[in-house]
Length: 199
Image 1 (cartoon, rainbow, N blue to C red):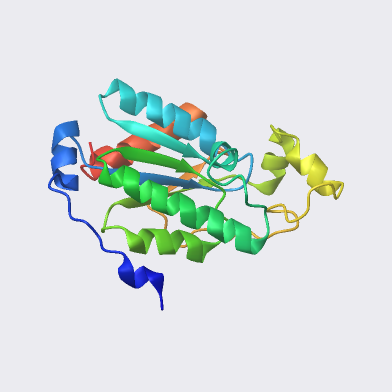
Image 2 (cartoon, one colour; image 1 turned 60 degrees about the vertical axis):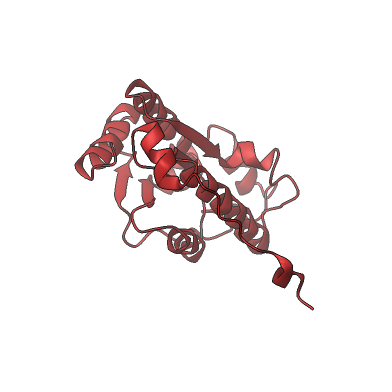
């Protein structure tokens, strides 16, 4: 017998709309995807600071940070990467339900995994932000020294080197971090949110 048959979804009185009204703004997930070293976390940090100054309730879910806790049992195989993103997607949904703007910074290399999260949310709640940076520039930056290790074979299944990255097909926002500064990229995200009445 499937034990899931004995689980029932409890409907609480306070709804997502109530929480959004309390916060004074819509809730959504800003999903930053791109190669390691492309600037996802740095840009998301800048965006969160700007949202904070506007009185927007936010929270950042960062790949490395969650692998130190919630996902510390996962490796970097294709299966583990899929489970990593699945868990993060579920957490992001809870934050959106709580009425917050959540900024998720994950390489999330597989297009289908990102689409699964999008399809699990209401229309307009998943905003895919592709931080477009060339592999060459990411390797030059290499803030964590991971590309050097990957090139030496010390890290296996490293995205962009020995593991694939599937670019978004129709992301809501494309940030070219080859060309634009962190500040300029952050302002592009804010412009999108304002133009589409999230703020």
